[in-house]
Length: 507
Image (cartoon, rainbow, N blue to C red; front, side):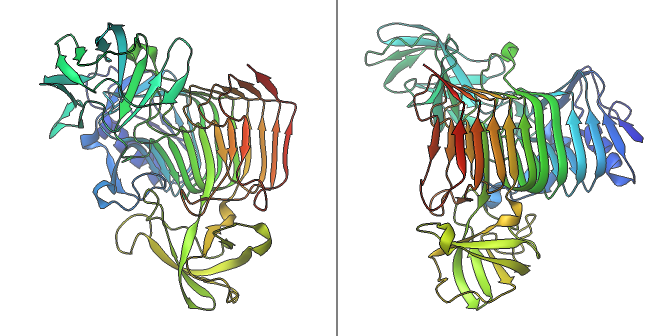
């Protein structure tokens, strides 16, 4: 076993100096050699700034799609081309600055991350707590790492300053708001009342209005931009990745994003904001989003507390049949603006075509992919929205352009989601569209804003694909429901084999 210690490469466990370059050197060395290896992060606090972190051009599902402004990703811990690597950080606390992906696993196999915590300093998600209110005024408080200034009747937010200026800037309510009540744990999407009809803003962050207001003392308005410029953590073209015994206090840009990978385990991970920071939310969007992940997916014994979207979303990707060039070749196109640029198929993968209007199983057409000409997920050498796919058999003439869509069914997993606490989620607890053997068992869904479990998929809106064929929802507890515990859309022709048994419904 080869062992690589980040402190030996210059990392500072006191947190006084930037450890980004030392982390990058350590991971490069660990990935370069043969045989099993371990990266050790000794106890301590490590601050990681973006200026000396690794950078890669990457196209990532469910983020900014093909927008070239955001193609380059900054990555604090990059594992690339590795085999049999363990990253151990017992009592190590990592604090990221600026806009970064905390960790990425690319083209690797059997990689385990365990023992450390991850947080961000001054993220672009601002939480404003109402500490007092009157008939036409309220006073707010923000976490200590938030920088702001008053500009007339506006609040200007600024991220921490790096070498080239602030890492981010914004104004007033930014682009999106949800409200969290720390007394009940409830989190909901909402309009932002803080910055409407302002008469004046005082230096103690008392805001005076030209209209009466409701007393919302104690509520926390969570405001952020809507550009998902980075995945919080990223697993791509990899196999056998394990995230175990981690404390994830915050993830910037998105959550854990798995893409065209196999056999992923997330166990005993606590997605929970550090109360010492004054923040309540632990993710800018979903906590876990698995886009075309095959094999075995296991999510067990985790805490998912307060995100800005779903706790867990497992899905494939529909690409629309844009053109037929011959009886075995089609041009496929990504249609959702947040998903494009990565290869959706490999030679040898199985492809299934469905009618977009119905997605009915009885008219689906399956084949095996022989050739693919399209984007590589790393650069703009090919149109990031289209790819040409040749299959091993003639396609019927009624498979016509625009009316059919295709997905890679070689990357639709067996899924086990067991023993988790899901709370403070404004949308769905679990959104599942996977055709393998799936079990959702022994979880607690506490006051989700939408369905506790949604079985869905569509070929016209989000283009998140996949019928459910074998799903058991058993021995879960659903608390404080304001939406269905289990919602299946559509209820006929697409999904089948769903058993809902021995669950408990409270309030």
